[in-house]
Length: 157
Figure 1 (cartoon, rainbow, N blue to C red):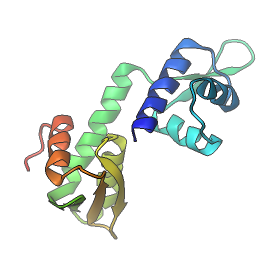
Figure 2 (cartoon, one colour):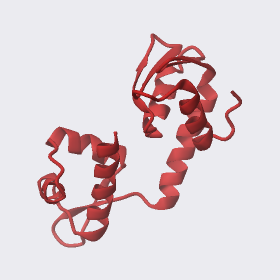
Figure 3 (cartoon, rainbow, N blue to C red):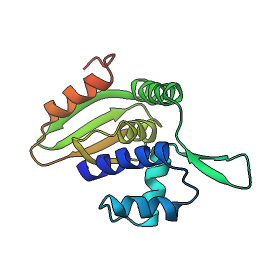
């Protein structure tokens, strides 16, 4: 996850600094920074960062990052989805189970993924009312809950 977060930081920096017209060009900059990623991974990173393409005013398009206000608004929407959907959080070892209202598991799982916790290896949703979070080695359920409360202070667990 640390490599992913570092890579996302570099992608943001490159897009802010240079006029990037294609994924191939962005991959070149990433390789110069010693990140060896596939085009598919880069596509997922761009989607996660909500990178868009805008007209350069001439004949082409360049990558752009959402504004800070837009990012904060998007994060707040994700937080609201989490709060609206979860019922309880329990953990044992490096497994966390988030029980959700029926039909809310996907939204809660997406919220956990979108908030990009270093503590989480990944999430799996049950049919429609349960999310399983696998935590990194050495991370406890209490550590995850503390990190969750930092990002979602309204959480009442």
